[in-house]
Image (cartoon, rainbow, N blue to C red; front, side, top):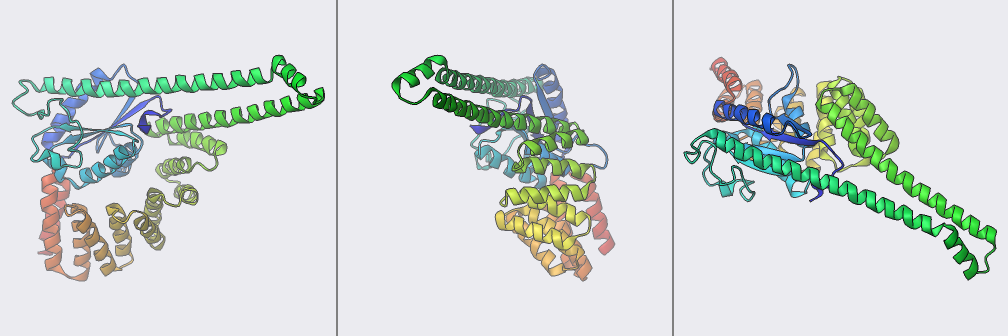
Length: 414
């Protein structure tokens, strides 16, 4: 699979989990075991909704980590399956898995009814015997955690071995290529050319020069590609460490080497976003769109910044374009509804939130946003109905703070 053929030396792991108290406790235990087991390996571990600095957009960062990780671990429980954000992350994770960009590993935290019906039901789950961590099968939960960590460690080591093997193959091919060229332009080869034809000696010298120039061009192209990949890897590592200025420097160098690399522009735009250089980020996303017009993610990112700087019309155009590329993009519908709400296009906003609910019926945020529109329209009963639905979903997800705010909103209306 293609995700094994990556030049990234550091392996990135992303863990998705629900916000329920039960799952949080299990996640902390798993994190302790991972630190002990993976300490000697060159890995970066990122957790959904966790380890975020104050003021950060955890959702944005979670998707950034998700889209750049080689291994995605889903910590599955009834709360995980019910959570809006977890379902969206699962959808994107399975897309990356289907295209070979990542390995998805589902972990059973707690018992799940009809496991095979889940989007990842066909994948090998952990623990290896399919028994949840909280099952009575495990006399000690630590035994289940050890089993899980061992399997994850094996997967990481396998990816690293494949990377090393790929590097060896590339080096071998490069060596063989240059060896054949050396033989071609050696004295022995030139003598054979001279003896076999009546071409003057100076013409043979010209031919040899042309061959040498061709070899140098090929080498330069090969070297440029390797340098670009290394810079993108370095930039991502710095982005993960929140060294945004350092990341921008690496991505800029990558762009100088490969001006048509859309990913480099998107990543530099991300770094500029975190530095609050919004115009610079918009410029980078725009360039990426010109290079890759079918990249819906670039449109959504540009749309969010345009909304933030109150260019709501521009944001709506970007979200609309993203929807045309990916018609069932729930995030694009919710974001477009948000921009339409600020323009007081209330019915259009309701239509967007309704469409998001049709695609993902358990989208708590869509219900909550639609309720807010109904409040502005004076539709109190519709607003209360949507707020109550959102409250039910937030309660299932363990989102206590959001649930508290929703209940306060219902009280205010009543």
